[in-house]
Length: 125
Image (spheres, rainbow, N blue to C red):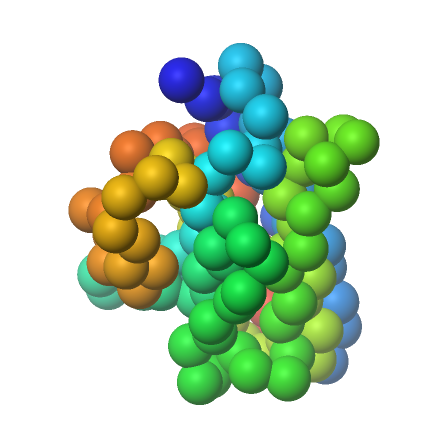
């Protein structure tokens, strides 16, 4: 079982950058497929990016070229680098994990077994 804790959210102006962190404990993050989701007020949770344990990634079209997922195995931490932020990126961002065994559908929220508590990102215009 893995525990996930996000950090790094905050208030930023449009065009700015933030790096979110998802610190894992209890298990090696390399044993998991990972994902980031976000949820804006009044909206459903939205897929942002998924990463197979092999390293392959898939992004939602709206963040391609602006967001990058990465892993630091020495720190057992997943990152989401967010550049060129827009007001529509405002949301609570969640990281999620699923064991690398079995079928992984990265854009499907209930494919994940473990979730962090979320971190707020607010982008002002």
